[in-house]
Length: 211
Image (tube, rainbow, N blue to C red; front, top):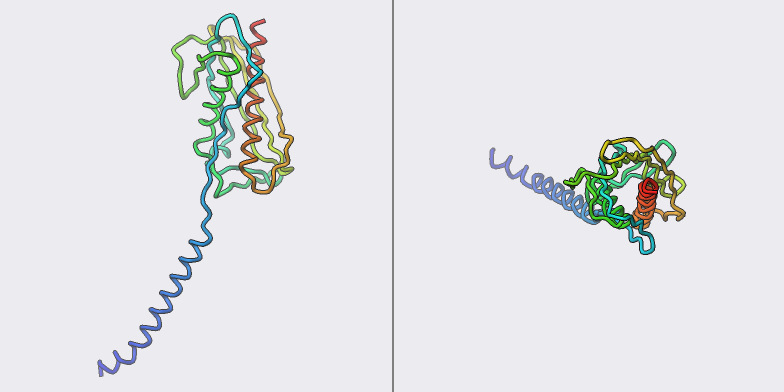
């Protein structure tokens, strides 16, 4: 009797296993074929071939802090689909934390603009007593629903030795290029240019104190 039951269930068991394996293989092949590689981006320093603000002696600058909105702290690149709706890309991401990337880049940009190597940041402190201290607050920095990149920022400049406030400044910058659909390389390139312009404006406010 036991043998008869085994003979009866054996074909059915084989059919079930075959269907399961076929389904598993089909699912795996679908995942493999639909997988898109993740691309990583950085906002690199800008070259200023004809712009350099020189002083009698090299200035010492300290970037005290650089703040960005919490939604930009994610590695997934943010874009706006409407005034109040933000989307994040799964396959296009920042190569490192965006705030740290921007700190390193502002240091190198200001170094080139002000012709000085003495730029301290929270990532790379300087032992020198600074001539000026800068706090940067980035309020918005992403692709808008109009397909243009927007950078809204303000910064506070202080005198270095006594931390005396010298002024609060702001900038609302927008790229001129219309970003093509899902062209993240073009978008990041425009972001680099806008951030370079912001650094140039910060450098000008510092130089204005030297006159």
